Length: 345
Image (cartoon, rainbow, N blue to C red; front, top):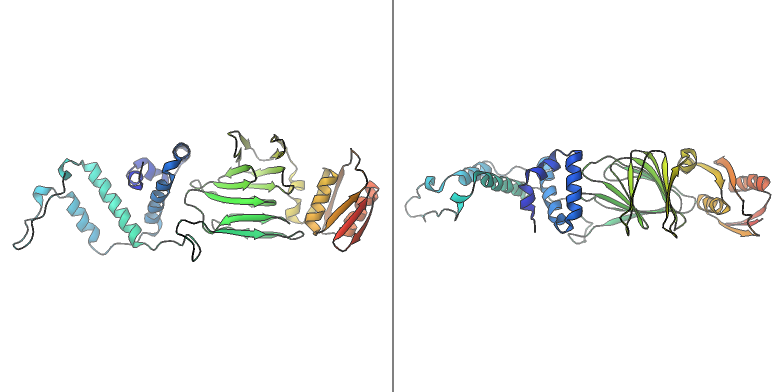
């Protein structure tokens, strides 16, 4: 079992934390995946290095110098103890320890002093356990939208009738959030901490990019990449899908099948700019969009034609005006009773 001391004295680990690059990121990501039992100690070691690097508090004046000199001094060079004091005993085996290991011990002690003297960050809300992650939930109601900024600077636009879960404080190795509904993400790049979005059975992983995730139907998931790159994996499988800008992944929750195709950002991201846009949308898609956007319930009478599709766009128009336009084009009747819309095909 590797300990945090092992990591702190590993030059490659120290280089990865202090001067990360693609090669080191790839190596340590694979290492953690292959050695999950060591990740806890690795996180603690990384936190120690980061705190020494960014917020180290100095030990009392002269303390480190005294310790350094004491560690490097050979037993035979130990000062003669004055009369009436106990003779100092050399540390067993110290002479047999190589110079590299002595320096490693010095580094570890130095890190430990910085860690011990530094104020600990608040990991959890008051009253929570030391290792417990405190999750925050943001919810939007039908007809409501929300924009928020996370602790790392990433911005998220939450569409109507959606929920976002994120930790009060991100982990030192990764940034995890959970989404139910639809959201647009602008993720700040951090090569040391990938950003994960969990949506039902899919896990979307990025470093820094912009993308939209839609999961309003409860089964199907659409992930549309605007810039950067994303990796999408199904938690129960090992298959991985990489998306390029302009590509969208459609995941059928019932069959488990994935389909990658190009998408029209004017349609997919219309909600973010206050537009309602339909591009050959099915009746089910139209109903769901209107219910979420206007906070109503739509009841349909009659049989939907197999070829029913609708295209159109609306900007900040009332529900009545939208339905009147659609009814004229598609030839259906409707009436609105408070929060319930009745459509007769």
